[in-house]
Length: 293
Image (cartoon, rainbow, N blue to C red; front, side):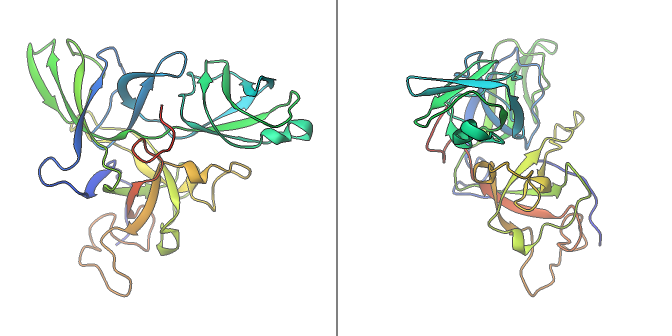
């Protein structure tokens, strides 16, 4: 049966814990965080105006790309200038590409040591004169969101929910996330850039990112999917960040080579058509990364 696009986020598949808690750890969401977070969403550490962690979590974003308008090298610290939506998190990885001439030495992967909304800095030992290019930002995920508890202003009582709606909490929100570096998740595939095709056996072992899609307030479930566009064969030329994508493909869901899955008629379990489900584990996550935020 042909699969249809019905993404549901990242759902626990295996791990080292046991039912019903598995690898849940407690985190906090600021009550002022107006962005909903849905069950199955990847989350990251929230950061402030200088890129440093605030102690809270927030909904993650797929890797983003920015244009760089110039740069300065002072006492071994490179500062690349641009206009960034938020300060790039300290400890995340940026991949610089497209720099030419004497600025080409900055092409490559770097760990962010300081940032603002107009500059990002990192230790640099090469020679550099001002130049322009681009950077891609790869922020380690903190885990997968699986629910929360908060004191509801409107209901005047504690509320347990699949998702954080973005308002209605008196005080901080107690969140539950899966952080175990060995945890595995089932997720549906799709393509944010062009027509989706099956993610097959040849893709096992590759890294992949995600797209948040659209969550559903009615049931609190995520609309996130594994973004086929970020696979090695599809990622934009010159953007060398595949090694820093958040997830790694470990298997096709409910599939054994040479056999027919009894679940093949259930949406997402046909490995021969687009929107098939895969099993992924953390690749670039806070528990795995050498650099923190």
